[in-house]
Amino acid sequence: MNYAGLPGHKDHALAQQYMEGKASGILSFGIKGGKEAGVRFYDALKLFIRLVNIGDAKSCASIPASTTHRQLNAEELKRAGVSEDMVRLSVGIEHIDDILADLEQALKAAN
Image (cartoon, rainbow, N blue to C red; front, side, top):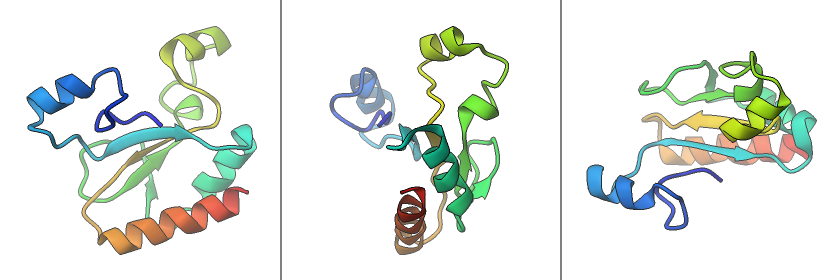
């Protein structure tokens, strides 16, 4: 889990300082089961649109290794902290229950 709102994140103190304790709606994480599970999770999302964008009012999802970082080789991906199973979410303003339901059903589909 890569989220500046978590106390263990390397930039947590900066997020607290500059974002008044309210870290952003952007996070990334790997899916247990590797690249194929990450793709299944991504493909199963219904509420999240598949778009390489941040700061939208609508929830967006991407797989950085095959979108924004696709030009990098394996070593460069590793240095950038991007794994093949990484999914990046930018959470929008939809109702939290709808967001959670979508994430839960996508996690089930991934496994």
